[in-house]
Image (tube, rainbow, N blue to C red; front, side):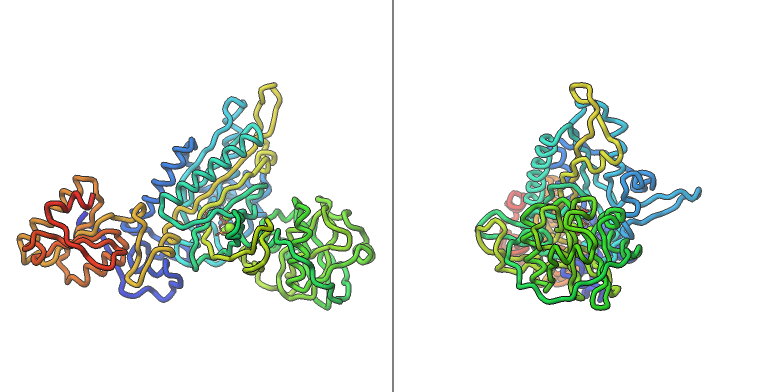
Length: 565
Ligand code: ATP
Ligand code: MG
Ligand code: MG
Ligand code: MG
């Protein structure tokens, strides 16, 4: 490819709105251009990178046995009403109406659509297991789109959904996806880490996230260098054992009625259906401030310990069973659909997550949840509330936790029967019995990966793409092209031979000042550069320099193609 026939559009300065390294460099290198908040055009150069990532993802997904399809981006509301997520998804979902005033959304994810497909297409255990995937544009009306394509509103995701006759089969595919993701991020040349994760709005039981490690990451991940333990801090927090502080002395408070707009805010915030929140929600007025308290289920014993730790850090006080009975009019275990016990009270203006009150609660310890009492803004993600600190004991007891920043580039879930049950996706088993399918889902942020890779690979001169995702492998820079026929002939010949050898080469034939050409080729992150100059040719050599090399080396013209292949 010749620069003169391509479209490079590099900038000297990054636009002021760009905050992170990758956002600045992607704009400066002309990989993307902003159309509106969270909306980006992939420029020709950027698109080459995006397609590289996509190709690796596709190859590994295919190799795993997953089958590609393509679902519509626009989805009818009815499916989401069936699953209960039409409201649950909250403002993150872009809702639209057609000319007949029918409700649709621009898909933020595709569990509903694929479950609908599966219930129509899959009748027998013989068709199971199956894993469908697509690489497709999603829209999420993020509350704070930022960092360019890292947290965009429109973005490219690979999403896969597997269907199974039983749990064991789901677990096997989940493990296979875990391994596939590990291969994908390894092949892309990224430093990453798989961590245990919260299941959030998607639901289900087991879940892992894959994080590219970078300071600009919005998530904090906790890991223990002495063991395999690694978790998103949301989860680390929910399992870190620690002793509770001495109970503070807060006055007990009164129960008030739930307040719908807060319920909705909390539901959206926690990613649970409003119904679920309502059932397990109390609003409590304490010290003149109302508190919202949430109870959620699905919990394990060790979360009691966690809750102590969590509450102690925030100065929460625990109520006794007697206080709970007196003020709530009911005892532990009597509230909510999940056998949850009753929450209590804090005098903190700080937000705090619940997510851990459960039937496994201990006598005398009842925990609280979120305080939206003073119209605090709803945080974008639960991860905004991280509180584990480096040096806390690792939940596996094998050492101390360290904390790193991570960018979530992949997320895998065992969904179980959450969607298949709600949407009646059943099959006939070997005995002719009707059974509900087990499901898994597996996402990769294809466009986010490009930004994440840059956060990990840059220097003061620009991007240093890992070779597997570089837009071109070799930059061929010709100096004095118009003055020297030797330079022109050699550069033209190298260009043709490299292309014939299948090397992706970008031939800078602009005949600009050397500094301008070098700066551009470095900025856009091409891993290898060769320079053809009159001076070099007099010695029969060209200059080669790897993007990370401290200095150039001479390579004979005759061996150049072989050297670069
Ligand atoms: P985040 O925690 O960053 O908001 P998520 O947990 O909401 O991400 P998932 O529902 O797990 O995202 O979607 C699968 C993948 O899609 C994520 O792991 C991430 O890489 C990517 N992704 C999600 N939201 C965005 C976004 N707004 N812009 C770009 N990529 C995104
Ligand atoms: Mg999100
Ligand atoms: Mg997340
Ligand atoms: Mg996620």
